[in-house]
Every structure is written in structure tokens, then in C-alpha cells.
Length: 259
Image (cartoon, rainbow, N blue to C red; front, top):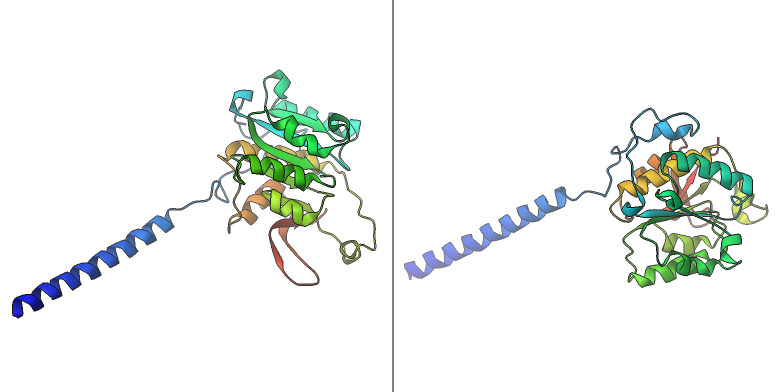
């Protein structure tokens, strides 16, 4: 009887020990899980003034590393704005036609008025990411179609800046959505929302492209996402969007203060 009790006690102790070790091991695994890019990994402030040479060395990427598809749409598709912005971007990253990483598309001209063509137009690209400025209505459907090709897990990032598309659709189809903070009247739809094109957009794009090239894939909607978006926004203060009626805070929709 004593032998049985000793055996039982030994087995019980063994089970408890194994459980404790499994718990410790599990905690260790959790403590080493990191976001793709930590909050302080990239200091992108040198790009706040795109006309000023960067104060720090800029990593060089080539078309073979993947391209960033940049879509100029509502509020950001004038010839002057596109030309000036691409001039700034090409100095740092180069256009894919010259072996660089920027693949520009202008809506509606390049799309024949159909944003749904985005899927076809990017199908043969070695994408590192997609950035859409002023997404037109229906963009989220085009992005959803692209995501479905990858079973909802595309190996590249998708950033939406200042969209005019359905905001819930944008949230569902992009890593994050970023726009200027709106007044109560604008949110209520009693005032027409106008896109404010300013010089800061070029430096915002410089940082956004840099971020995409540093990432190994899309940004995840975790506790670090706010810091990632703040890094991209630079000196503009960023906070999560909060619905005025429900008080619900968005997971990946952010607003930034206009200067």
C-alpha cells in the first residue's frame, strides 16, 4: 500500500512539475513575441522637409525588392501635385520604370474611371505594399478582391490616407486608415468635406514608403499599431478615431491634427 501511495505521490508531483514548466515555457514564448517594427525602430524625422537632404543615410532598395503602388485619387490627383510629389519620392526611392520602387497610378485617368481595375493593374507587380491617397468610392471592394486572392492574408501592407470611400470598408480592407481630424459638423455630414493638400503630404509619403520597405509584411492591429502610425505621421499628433455617437474607439482608424 505504501508503494502505491509513493508511486501516486511521485506521479502527481511529476504532473504538477510538467504543468509548471509548460506554463513557464508559454510565458517565455509570449514575452518574446514582437511586432514587425517596434515603436522606436525607425526615426523618420529627417523626411519632415522633403526638399532638404536627409540627415541620416537612407537605405537603398531596388525594384527586385518589391514595389510600392502609390494611387493618387480624389484631392491628390492634379498634375501639379502628382509631379511635385513624384519628384520628391523619386529622389529617394526612384520610380520602378527606372529600376526604383515607386509604381504610381492616377485615378481616374489610369483606371478608365473604374477603381475596380486596381486588382488587374497590380496583379503582375511584385508588391511590397499599396498606398492610396484619397480613395474613391468602391476602393474597399477592389482591395477586398485583392485580399481574397491571398485568402485574406496578403504578404504586403495596405495604407489608406485621407479616403473618400466608405470608412468601414476602408478599415476592413487596409492595415490602417489615416485622415485629418474632422469637426462635429463634418462628421454629421452637414458640411462638405474638402481635402486639404499641403506640403506635409510629401514627407508623409516618404515616411510611409520607408515603413513599407522596412516591414516584412502587413501591419497588425495590435497594441503597437498606434505607435507605427504616429511614426509615419511624424510631427502630426495622432490618436484613434472615436465615434461621436457611440463612443466606440476604432481599432485601425486614426486621425491627426492639422497644423
